[in-house]
Image 1 (cartoon, rainbow, N blue to C red):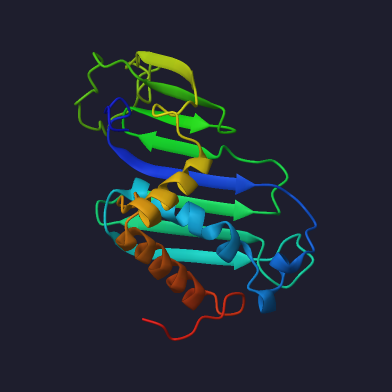
Image 2: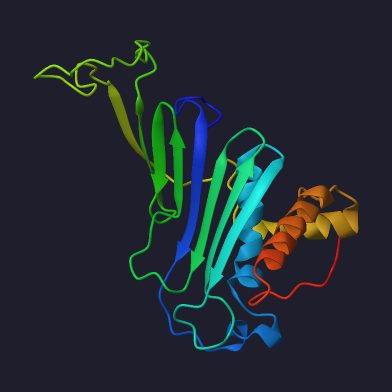
Length: 217
């Protein structure tokens, strides 16, 4: 995204899908269960970072599909940034054919990661100039109609998911130790955590049947 090879990124999808008849305490509203409280904070935080803009609006929908408790196991959240970018978050225990965990759509190409193991890229060659012609109200030609006269020059790549800094999810505990014991600033800012809570509270407000929320500001 930062390199610009995908052009202007206008939509990003984050998905975590499976299908399971789950019946533990995390499926019960009285125990604080449901996907919003479970996986929700992780992907909402991720989405807010990828939004790269203040949030302009939040839309959400919670459903119970396969879980045996009374809490939601299917969560859909749409974040729209002030920059016009859309973040589409879907967390579900009721999807039998999973979507890619990441999908990034840009004006010059797309990126997907089916399983967090590889990243697949398809984007216009950096030397390719996007046509600047205007729309034509006339009848399309018999051959090459509907934009067929423009031949995109694509680049396709598959790269392994390997953090450049060598970190893993377990390094969070090292940062926590250094923050508490050595006074090293924690890499996650308090403002970022507050953003997640604000969005989560808005989702709860929109879906009171599944996620009752106190009148907290």
